[in-house]
Amino acid sequence: MNTKQVKKIRRKAKTIMVEWLHSLLPEHEQKLINEKNVLDHAPKPVSYTHLRAHETRHDLVCRLLLE
Image 1: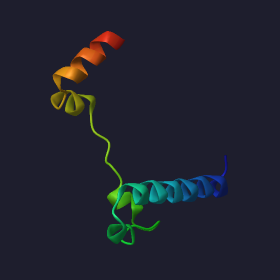
Image 2: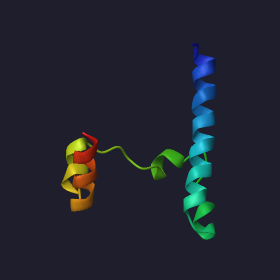
Image 3: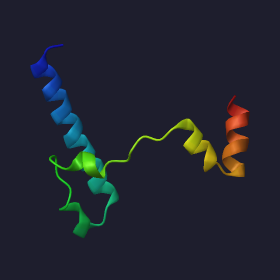
């Protein structure tokens, strides 16, 4: 994959993220997010430990049943 292809994929990913965030936000907030600043508003990755720290009893039961 060359640089041009990578840039094209990144642009498409940003477009998809903007559309996804717009679908979640109220209309008056949608205009604040565009392809230039979408990464500032996107959910940030968290560690598995962080996720476990917020786990509810229901989550725990489901996770244990799936293991």
